[in-house]
Amino acid sequence: MARIITYPSVTPVVGDYLVGTQKTTSGNQTNPTKNFTVGDVVNAGLGYKVYSALLTQAGTDNPTVDELKNNTTATMTWTRVGVGQYRCTASSNVFTTNKTQVFVNVGTAPNGPGSFVEWNTNTSYVEINTYNISGTSSDDLIDKGSLEIRIYS
Image 1: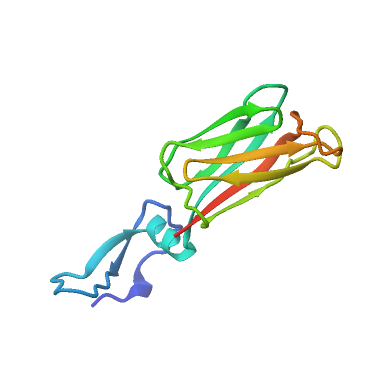
Image 2 (image 1 turned 60 degrees about the vertical axis):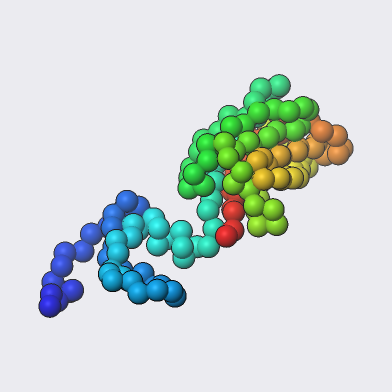
């Protein structure tokens, strides 16, 4: 048997494999030893998948997005639906009802303090609505705003 402390230490990456034992509750499994990726183990430990991005929106343009992480298996597309109304549409129904959580802010608030954001979701999209300090739907309020969508299992 090998001594584990004799193996070299490395910094793992998401695609690296780990050896583990898969637990089964039914039937006889002849070989429970399996390969798991580091990413699989991290996702299992977190209990959620995540889409994280930085958003900027100007004029009547669609939001521009700097995607930071997306392990949802869906491609996200951003569109401006109306004044102060922006939609993140997933290529598949990944947003689970009552298990999707959204964290969002306006970033540097380019048009002054007091703007605020609300969000709504269904299984195929998350919608972000922005309002100025007077409570009126407004564009031009997001500049490198942080967005994180968590989808719990």
